[in-house]
Length: 205
Image 1 (tube, rainbow, N blue to C red):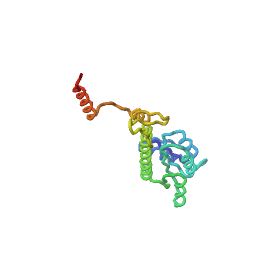
Image 2: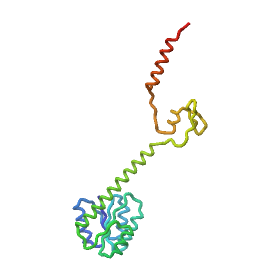
Image 3: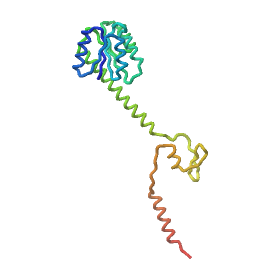
Image 4: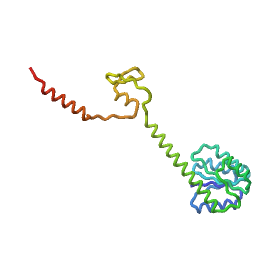
């Protein structure tokens, strides 16, 4: 998984980058919110973003809001790093698009656990997205006959929208993806056999 890290403190960036790389993830770093936003736009593989709240040029929350405006599926899982601990501030971060937060000074085990949560959510989104694509593809292959079909009570032919009467087989073939194979059912076979035998027994002259 590719993870974006944005922090204006070079030492913090280095520690987080090396730690996350040790966990087996690819890492992209940015020194402010604008760099983070530009990096996210440029790399569709970024699924998790870790944004420091207070950064120059653009804060982490401002970057978070801009990232949420980008139509991308799955949407990034965004973690905000902050030294703020008031419920009002943390609620503000969540309302502005953050999925979770880690308070500074942060514990690396806690950071890993929250990244794992984000990874699972991204996997669920990807799985759902795949299923939606497969469902749309399946629906595109299906044409359903709907409504009332006018059929002749005697010959069983069907009248189409152009007032033309055609066989049931022709009508269904033209209005669905159904293909017909032909055979003889046991009842028809027996009837045909009896008819042939009857013809053979018909007296002549």
